[in-house]
Each structure stands twice: as C-alpha cells, then as structure tokens.
Length: 258
Ligand code: COA
Image 1 (spheres, protein in one colour):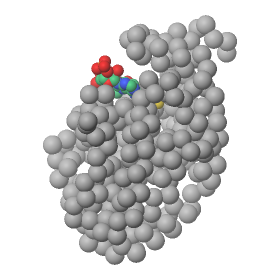
Image 2 (image 1 turned 180 degrees about the vertical axis):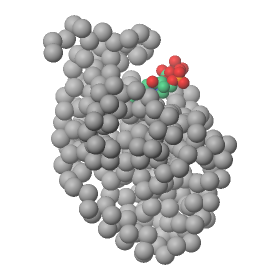
Image 3 (image 1 turned 30 degrees about the horizontal axis):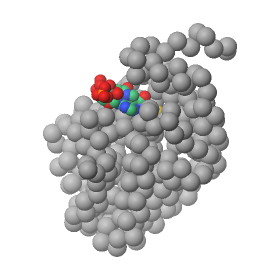
Image 4 (image 1 turned 180 degrees about the horizontal axis):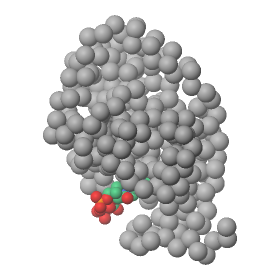
C-alpha cells in the first residue's frame, strides 16, 4: 500500500512529504496522524536538526480532504482529533521547521505556513484560504496571525473572498521568505537547510523559542476558531459547499438566511 506520508532523514534534515499526489495531497485524518508521528520521531531523533515539510507531485496540499470533512467532521477545539494534534504539533515544534511549497497550497496548506520558521516556494505555487466559500471560518490561528501580519483590510480581502494568490504576492504579504524557479526549489531548500544544520543547535532552538514566546494566546485562538469551525462543518451551508465542489458547480448560498 502506498505510504501517504513519508519521512526521510539525511544529513541532519528530516523531510516529511505529503504523498497523495492524485488528490493533490489533500489531507485525510490518517495523513495528519502520519505527519504528527513523523514530526515526533524527528523531534526525538537527536541527529535531526531541521524538518522540511513538502508535497509529492505538483501540489503542496489541497488542504483538508473534503470527503473526510463530511464523513468524519473533526473536533477542532483542542481535543485529540488528528487535526488538533497536527495543529498543536506545528505550534509547539521545537526544531526549525521549513516548508518547501512546491505547488498549490489550499486552506490549511497555506495556514500551516504561518507556523513554519522558513518558507520557500516554487514560482508556480498558488495559495488560497477559501474558508468562506466552503461555509467555514479560518483555522490554525490564521484569524490571529494574518491580520497581525498584514492588517485587517488586506486580511479581510484574503479571507472574505478566499481568492487564489501567486507566490510573488505570498512573498510580498509575508507568507513566504523566497520564491525560486520550481526546478530549483529542492536544491535551494537543501542549501538553506545545510546552512542551518551547521549552526549551533542550542542557539537555533532557543532563538526559535524566544521568538515564539512573544506570540499571544495561539492555543486559545485555535480553540475558539475550532469550536466555530466544528459547528459549521456539521451544518447545511458546508454540506452545500462541499456537495457543489464534487458536483463541479458553484455553491448556492441564496437559500440560507443572513
Ligand atoms: N479533498 C478531497 N479531494 C480533493 C481535494 C480535497 N481538498 N482537492 C482535490 N481533490 C481531488 C479532486 O476531487 C480530484 O479528484 P478526481 O481526480 O478523483 O476527480 C483530484 O483531487 C485532483 O483535483 P482537481 O480539482 O482535478 O485538480 P486541479 O489542479 O484542477 O485543482 C485544486 C486543484 C486544489 C485547486 C482543487 O482541487 C481544489 O480547489 N480543491 C479543493 C480545495 C479545498 O477546498 N480544500 C479545503 C480547504 S479548507
């Protein structure tokens, strides 16, 4: 059976790959668990200094698997669901976390980047947070981080319309450190991680810890977002939106009272 999450450690770098390319690496509950397990193993492995998250094929990830969303709506308000475990792990991960965004990054594919220390993107990568068009709200504390990063007005534009934006715009807004030609992404990330692995591990860990300790109540915001997200997931507006995606039509929200 194909492994939906792979982890390979080489030269002090653990590369965790979301590996479901035929579905644009859409994340099932089992995949969230797989990423968490791989991150925990990397955390415990004293030879690993840096972790890279990336996607197989031409996508980073299309975000949460929409079939899974409907069949197993996760509790996102801090419980033990695989999604909550994943979010808690990327927030508290003590080693340097690098994202190599090789293609489309939708929903949590974009919001998880807010918790990575360094993000490098292919020039072909596309980003979006289409929560409202799915009848949902932002998650992963993005409702806290994005307005703090770019101000309310620009955040409102991204969140309310949920439109896709390109890698250049992602860099301009602060989601991404650098954009490189797609064919050069792997080599670029390898060069950056080689520099990191040569540095003092204590200095890296403590520098990260100091920067992260300045952030306000991330867990509290995730719990707040998660409670709303979970309630909406079980409601009729999300059912309409996800039904529309698989029927390849636009959702019709006109039937719902404002
Ligand atoms: N959940 C489940 N399946 C998904 C998926 C998701 N989030 N995203 C893509 N897929 C599936 C498609 O249904 C399709 O399956 P099929 O080949 O059996 O028909 C396959 O992956 C390829 O997707 P497709 O839409 O044909 O690729 P594309 O290159 O035209 O578009 C995306 C890629 C990611 C832009 C588009 O698939 C998309 O918008 N997906 C939904 C993203 C989303 O809303 N995520 C949730 C955010 S909270």
